[in-house]
Image (cartoon, rainbow, N blue to C red; front, side, top):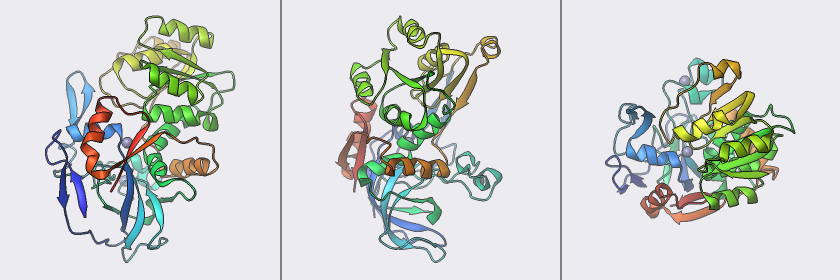
Length: 350
Ligand SMILES: [Zn+2]
Ligand SMILES: [Zn+2]
């Protein structure tokens, strides 16, 4: 098999060839058809996440060893099946749900494997889809996508799922409420696209890039605001009549987090998703006085993945713009993403 791997944190990925892996036990070998390039791959590539205030969490500390194959938006065809893997057949085409836990602990048994303390996630802990083959630990992580184009369907494993799970945390909004979506990059734009399928409120989108705001309007945003402008917060207050009922920050900068919280009305809900990095001071007085709710949202559960794919198959999730590139252009795809030159999603094809 051919893999494009991190051989040194932050240095260009290198092609390495290995024998095709053989699935053992419940494992399934997928022949990769496509793999999306996610913004979080940039952090994994760098080898750390910025926690703010000069603190970092490194991938090496989390036990990731080099060389390492990234890629967690994987779609492929079942090429080989371990002796204990039931319910799939050679040739089946499936999305790989990548947010996999140990399967045995309390949170895993509750269906919240993404909270597992010993994760085996594809492309962030175990070898991922920047390769022509990948091992999936169990058939239960394989999700059917019949009727959905392959290059689009892979993006639901992270970009789509992250947007869906964040939106679900604001599903209590009523028709007259406003949902502020901050950041109209890949994931944020995805959320704008299918917010109507999950949330009743009116969607306002904030971004600092006029092109992205244009894309957000086309995707159905009722209003857009340039949050680099000093009057942005006043505009939100006017548009919402006193504050948004919920805000989702798909960027995760200190400035966007503050903007989201400041834009909330009393009783509002802030959902923090983006991993840009930094930290955020919170008023210990306004938090109780305004009875604010603050949620972190990270990808989504396997159950949410199935719910999302049901919406997609029903045609209730308009397609995200996709740009397909060959796998050997993984480095330029990552660099373009870092430079902010990608609208929608780049998908690599072996
Ligand atoms: Zn991702
Ligand atoms: Zn577990």
